Image (cartoon, rainbow, N blue to C red; front, side, top):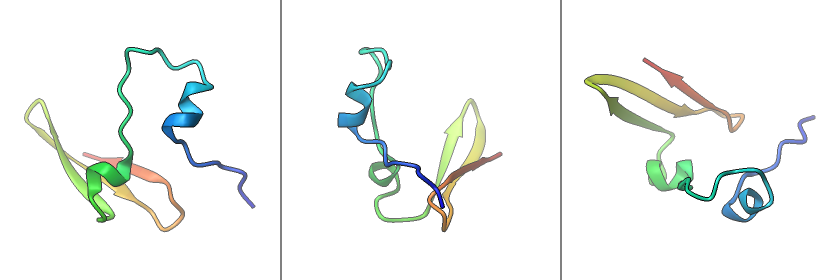
Length: 59
């Protein structure tokens, strides 16, 4: 059984994350979907949420 905890803006405040970094959740990006397409430097990437709650990035 996994002890992974959800990362929230509140949990990030208690970690060593530099203050100049922005925080955005996958749910904000995906807007209820399980997969989004991202473009970076002309390349297309797929960011997918698995059934186990993990994120997978494919080119």
